Length: 220
Image (cartoon, rainbow, N blue to C red; front, side, top):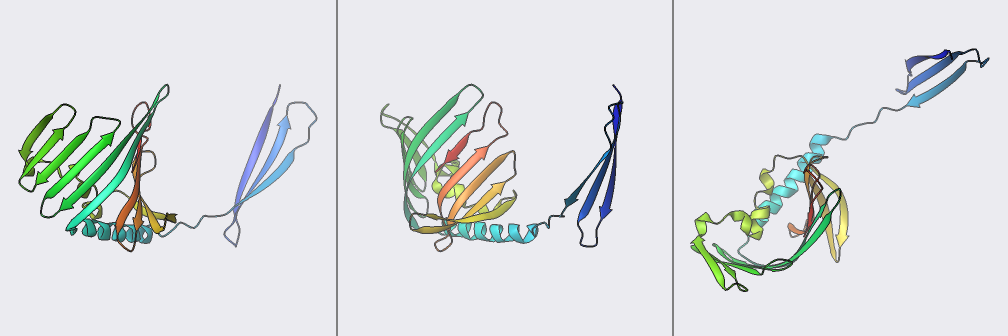
């Protein structure tokens, strides 16, 4: 059947383009004549990654400070958790209402797909109440993870060690948001829609494509 031989030559041009020329010779007794081809390649100029990351980290630090210094607040949001696998998919919706008053006072109510729960703290003791079962748990507030409150999700943003970058500007209703992505491709990542005027998060989306059997995502 014979064979063909391809010869390739790389030439760097004065304008920094790369010329790649090919010459193909056929040795298969088909009578085909050799052919020549050429391609040009341009060197992509990388972004100033340090500057991009610095801008994102500076904004995240301001957001963390705003939540850390928040004295009182009322928040309502909807959390959607989706899990997709090779043979299955699920979706769960939770609605949350949060009232906070520093130092340490908190009411966090969740309703939706799961059991209704109400978490209340007076700064010293935290109660978690389950109305449907008429049951509750009680622990010292110091033992209650900070992540159980809205503050816990954002007060440490300025300390994140993951790569962060501002990806675009996007309008949510009447709010012009700066969209920041935290994390690496192919793993866990958070995307935050931040109002740069109030330094508050209006929407969050996280995805984890590294988990076995699917890629869960959470949006609030």
